Length: 105
Image (tube, rainbow, N blue to C red; front, top):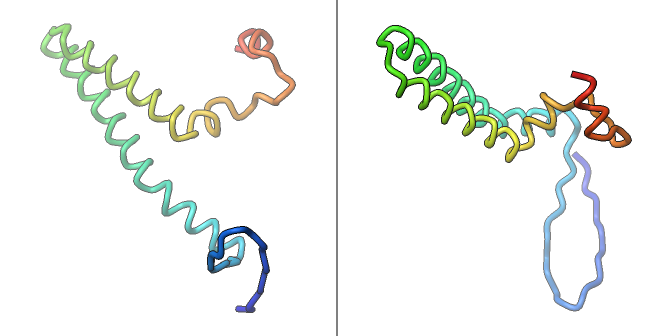
């Protein structure tokens, strides 16, 4: 590990430690940050499947409504955390318009 010193001038005197990490360490930290998000998504997916199975087996419409609610919650969380943009809409480029994207499906 090497020491790197950077001097930044500002009106306020603040001492901020700078840490430069290798790409391997950054990738590992990113994976650790995504782990709780993945656990939540898997739990919601299991909840959705369980609700759909119970709705079918009990012939109760309420379970399917709860499955729809959990699906909307899962999509909202994936859009909020950026997982949707990374996994669902990764093929869209910046020059692609929404009309072209819809016709791609």
